[in-house]
Length: 480
Ligand code: C2O
Ligand code: CU
Image (cartoon, rainbow, N blue to C red; front, side):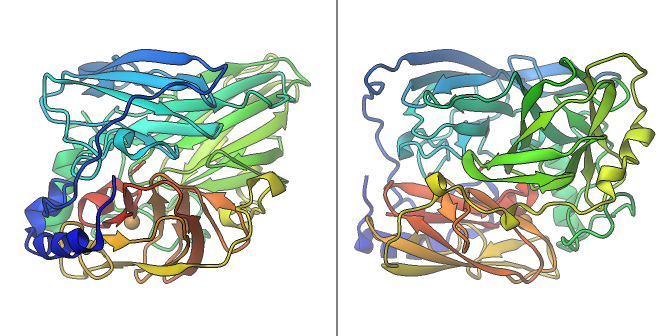
């Protein structure tokens, strides 16, 4: 679909009257944005069709001790892994048994617009009791995830990994683990909707209280708004962690996904160094690290050669108390306690910041002259819990119009004292050094110019992946 310049201008005017209600419901106020009509798809030649049904519904989950009522896909946490090979046709039917409308967004995948899962931009929300089928071809291999794009539902149990395999990759490793990080509050006496309401009532964008624990020397300033009782790896608290088994000397690929709503983590494996091979699906020049940061919505793939014993895999929340923990077991020994795990020396040394990685040559955007420049300025109000892009919250801000076929430079400016993971749908942009990302951390007052190739027309969301910031307005539409 295409939105004409004239339509856009009218859209902008209509949107301006949309009001906060429109922003809070995650839909633009203007009716002029036309959602695309899905077209029939066929897999690439030689590829197959991957089919699945996901049921989103209220359920009770055991987090390895605490039991919580929440909403989840197929009653498991994380939700079911969706795995396909690049070029496959992925066909997923979502059965919405939630008491609320929902949608599913396939985070990081450069799919066609009609399957992107953003109510108001790419589809109508899937109402309670309704089914909706998403069909897309995943063009690029890599580590992705899926989650709703309605309200703060992501901060419930509605998230799951999506892995796209490379048919040509040699796979120079013996085993592979998917490690999903999360901050958890739902069903612990409150819900994410109540957390959002409290933030709105608190009257300040940084009204949250922050523990002094963990990674105090991080570059992120004020890193989150919500105090969480639990941090999870693969749906479990640290006192009864997920145990990942292998043999000593094996090389393991670990795909780390940060599905948290409000928490940046530093990740390390006790007594090991990791080799970072990919971020956000795309290959990097291999980089060794003792620990790395991961913002909400980011993914890092690392390869590790395992020693003999039992080792904590730790995700330490930045500027918050607690830790998420899994255990890597290649030999005998007791399971480390969360306290011992949080104290591993890898977390006290240098921590790799993803934007310092360099791209693999295969991942670079081909050289091209810049055809257009646009702005994405992040701001917040001091008096109310309201976040904005380009001067107004979503629903009141203008869609950003780009020209199809152009190389577009996006000047991203963080005009706040918080760190924001900035995520763009439908594209993997290039940082100034060429690194390909779909989600990038912008530290307080940081500016960064990224480039994207406008080769996937549609209505695309651009937003902060702190789900409370996004829901309080830090989102915009990028359309062509
Ligand atoms: Cu995970 Cu709009 O994003
Ligand atoms: Cu933010």
